[in-house]
Image (cartoon, rainbow, N blue to C red; front, side, top):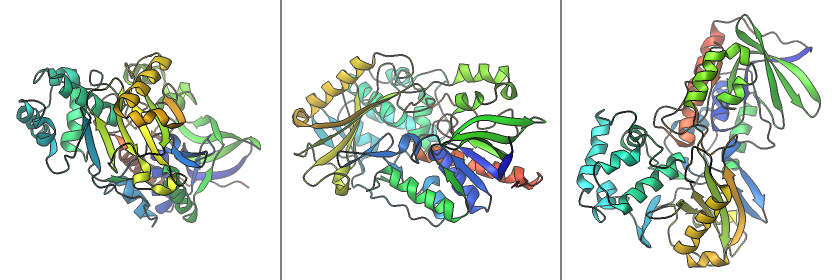
Amino acid sequence: MDTKESYDVVVIGAGAGGMAASARLAAAGRRVLMVDDHDRLGGRASSEQIDGFTVNLGAIAIERGSTFEETFEALGVPLDIREPNPATMFRIDGKMINVSKGGWGMLLGGITKKAAKIGATFADARRGDMPEARLSTGEWLSGYTKNKTVHALFRNLSAAIFAANADELPARAFLTYFGTKGAFKRFGFCPRGTVGLWNDLGDGIRRAGGVIRLSTRVTSLEMDNGKVVAVEVTDADGTHRVGTGAVISNAGPRATYALTPDAFGEEYRRTMDETIRPAANIVVNFATRERLYDAPGLVTFGRTRRLCNIGELTATCPEMAPEGWHLYVAYAVPKPAIHDFDEEAEIEAALADLKDEFPGFADAKILSIRVMRDDWPAQRSCAGYDMTQETPIPNLWHVGDAVKDYGDGGTQACALTGQRAADWADSWLENAPPVPVEV
């Protein structure tokens, strides 16, 4: 195929990591092309319209004061989110608990006498004193208490942040996130749905000279002397070759490996198969005429079957629903979350929790029930089971939630991988000959 165009960097996938990498490269003055096989930006954190409601597909909460926000600032794009206050609450035995000032001590103090000892482990984590690597969060917690409510709460915290059960998530990952990371202290919702943020950032990328093509699939990578020199893309106009000096992939290690298996090699495939553990969740979007509870942020549950947390988006963003409606998104995590499960039974368990917690749910309008698993999971790999961003190909790097820092999570984690890959690509190009543009 003739090369009709060339770019400094081709970014595969317009999820949080790919968007962040493209934004950073565009801000640095690099010629960047970002392609995605979907018709919208944002990947698994995008939005759609259903019956006049703005419904989010996956992630909804965007952190303030993070690498994600800095990415917007790099292109001069405002971050259009509204922060709920309080940001988080807990619902235990039917009661709402606000721990915004009391922290772990207040949350656990009314449940178990071991609250102080459990809370002290987070301070230990900040000093680097961690459990051994193979210990799960559930096993670690059992060393302090057998209290079923405490175990249910930690299971739902694990599920809400990492889309994994406490017996699947390494204790080190849990403690790293809550002990040393931001742990979602400040976050907000976009009143236009999360896709509104991606559209804003996409406009900023274009203003800086970047090119974005949706409904476009990368079908293979062309190699020369061990490096990527071009990508083959297919869109409505057919298949053509695009020259490039580097590639950043937000498609996930497995999909990226499939583009050029020989270049990655058998050892990389074995490592990938042994490491990656996709994590699943169930997203229930629904609306009610009567408000179910009074809390503007995210609510995490105590003892439930599968339901881990819920948010009423119209409490801060009423324009996401037609007048007179309250819009909710509820998250449930199946058992198991990182292995095969009975999808129908897990959905029923999640709906049963909603009916038990909120009698008004019986009159709800169900907008969508999305099971995120397999090739479109909640997390491409559970925290603690991530690949490295680097690959055997020196000018190709991964971004996204299968290569995040240990114990990290959310769009913030993906944005950090995007920033890092953009820096590597920029450095690589500084020492490489320019990519010729063929007309």
